[in-house]
Length: 286
Image (cartoon, rainbow, N blue to C red; front, side, top):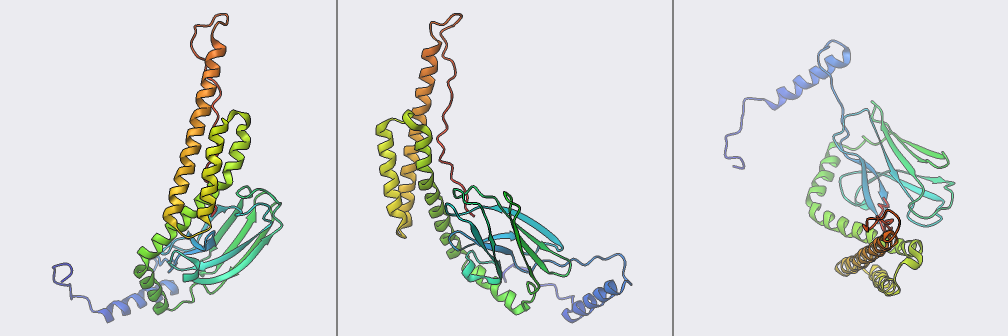
């Protein structure tokens, strides 16, 4: 009924299972040489990141053995340790997936958030054993954990988890977008002070005041869960920062043009002044 076509009934399910089992037995016994059996990860593997989000590092159905690496950073100033929460599943948030293990990487030198480089590596061997490591690229310090139960879920459990992931897909997607937007807004607030400090006296006082006001409004919005308000205040602060950047650019361009006029050999054409890039890049704190 779904496809409008008659189903093909020429295959006996019992025969398919029996033939498949026989082929696999032949491969394992070395009697069948021209067939390679590849195992895959039944569910995605990853870690918990800022906001309780499940960040996938190895996607489901990836052929094993395999290995993947990803760079993360700290979420707070002077953070000297990170907790690595290893998970398996298909939901968007850590709390809805299966915990495989936890460990901590200590000894990270104090630094502004987003500066340390933490390399998280997942390695799955041919036996399905998962090796997870976290390494501070600045100091070389590393912690590891080995997980032998990653493929211990029964088929019924995997099917249930896949069904739940499909059932809550839209709800999870919306919630994740909200959390990520909130994380971006928090990073934007964090970057404002550095931007103004770097610009110094180049930033007009009236622009600075507008930016500080917009920052304060966004900070207050972040204390709540009104995501529409957070988005509105985030866009307002971004707009003010863009306008400041444009103002500084035109100031520098005008200064360059003025200094070029009346000089020996000058054609009167404005020289290109240094461009000041307002540093308010939104960093991913995953």
